[in-house]
Image 1: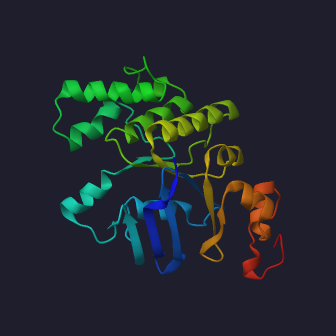
Image 2: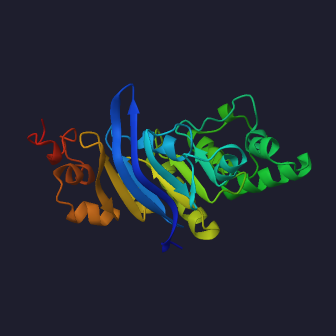
Image 3: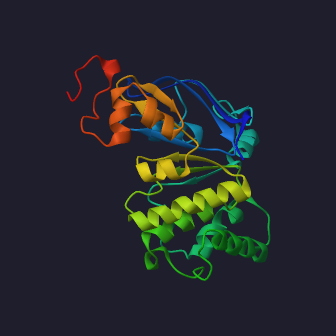
Amino acid sequence: MTDHHDIIIHVENLTVSYEGAVIIEHVAFDVYRGEVLAILGGSGSGKSTILKQIIGLERPGSGRILIEGRDMVTAQGEDRLDILRKIGVMYQSGALFGSMTLLENVSLPMTEWTDLPQEAVHLIARMKLKLVGLDGFEDHLPAEISGGMRKRAAIARAMALDPKILFLDELSAGLDPVTSAELDQLVLSLSRNLGITFVIITHELPSIFAVANRAIMLDKHTKGIIAMGSPQELRDHSEDPWVHRFFHREPGLETSTTTGSPPGQ
């Protein structure tokens, strides 16, 4: 259950530049324990950039990223590793190792990060695969299963170390509507039953309305957040034409009113 008094991720004054070009500037938001937060925006708006900063793949130019009160940006050594163990990531492609079975893929983080005996590692890996509906597919290679099943396996691997937060990058990308809806239900089930906090990068409207408690919308022109609230609030009450177009699937998404440019230009 979402606790709006319990902040699990705090992003403050985040600014990121690549080769002198500012991608996001002075971005700030919180993620509450137990919620599903969707990060939305058009191409180049900084969705993946923010993800990379929070999970520690890149270091921002300035700002703070607190995970359960500890700063990911400045943490080093064992302290940084301890923070990283609190999070799990499912990348857009799934990023499973093609030469390893699903059981071996899910076992890998435990083999790398714990001293558990192999028998215990495999037992836990089987449990994680069962949690995502892949019971009986432990010995399959990624190439032998469907795209939706690969996403499920990637979620199982992301859950291997019992993280408190799961980051899902484009969960529904490339999947048919039925498979996407099934993955949405999986996210809701894991959120409700295990209390996992989810941060989802997506642009799929059905998924946004199915799973997200809140959404933040990024804009590449302002280099920051232009809207924040429940998907229903953003769809029905946002006064920003860019946000309106996104939620009503109207053309002309390249422009926000904050740029001063006429709509559609």
